[in-house]
Image 1 (cartoon, rainbow, N blue to C red):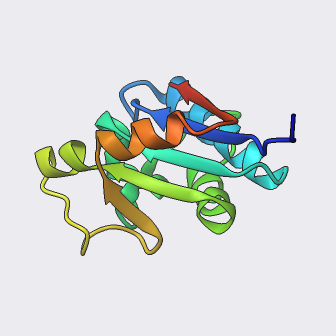
Image 2: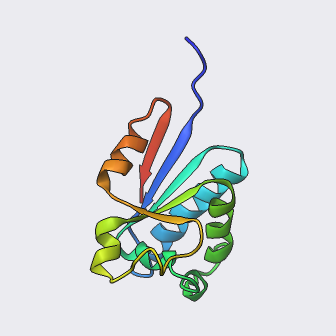
Length: 123
C-alpha cells in the first residue's frame, strides 16, 4: 500500500462565545501547519467573524497564543474557508474577507473531509 499524505481538516464552530474551544481549534490547525501537515481550517458559526480584517485581533484569551498569529500561520501554510451559509447569515461577502480566505459550502467540506488520508476535527 502506497503512503498517503495526511491532511488535517479543522472545523471551528466557536468564537468569542466559547473562547477556549475556539483557541484550541486555531492552535491545533496552526501547530499542524507549522509542522508541515497540510491543513484546511473551516470557519463556521461564530468563528465566521474571524474571516474579516481586524476581528481576530479583538479576541483575547489568557495564556493562549494571539489569534491573529495563529490565523496567519494557517493562511501562510494551509487554507482557510468561510462557510457559505455562515457568511450569508452575517452579511459577509467575498469582498469583505481577508486575502486568502475563500467562501465555500458543505459539499466542499464533505469532499475535503472524505479524501483519503484526511482527518477531520470539529471544535
